[in-house]
Image (cartoon, rainbow, N blue to C red):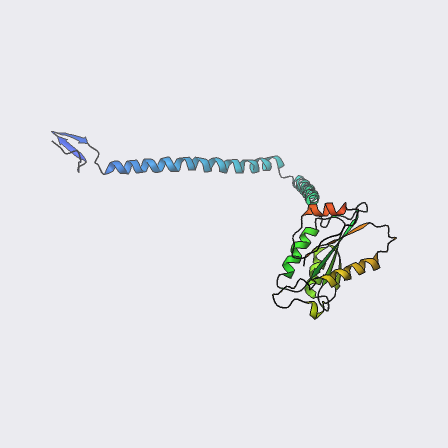
Length: 246
């Protein structure tokens, strides 16, 4: 009788020797077989890929036959092809570039947007939001009036960078008309002097006999406006009383 788990490699029976694989050698054979099955496919794949990459180069060298002039001609052809391909890319890129604001049209009336503004921490952010809306409106003229003794560098630089058609004005509200602390007295007007200055500038710039049609709209810098609003404003033909809230 011999145990199922053998520690010897030979089992003697009389004068004959019989080879019996030990239990320790069986896992080794399985590991070797697994390694071969894993490595063999990758070896074949790398060999095929290497041959496919080198074969076109060998074919080119065989066709050339040492003719250097043909190499230069092929190089020039490829260069011309690259140039033409680059030109195509540039043309396609140009087609997708759009300008803001839209091109000026003589067929549309001008919308003169009057915006009073004053210095505060969120002034630049609110003016930037408003200018991004105006960039989508054709034939828009932005009249921005600062409540200050002089035109500030912040607003001047912002208007210049927007690319809009604009007019930059300034007039300071008298001290007795300004808000005192957080109390908002409804009897104290806000932005009235700035709006009046913009209207006076329009009267002095465009006389009544001017052939250029235009609409005046008051837009505060702390509001958000829909583009549909300006399309409706452009079609306005009558002046109606408007209620203002302070």
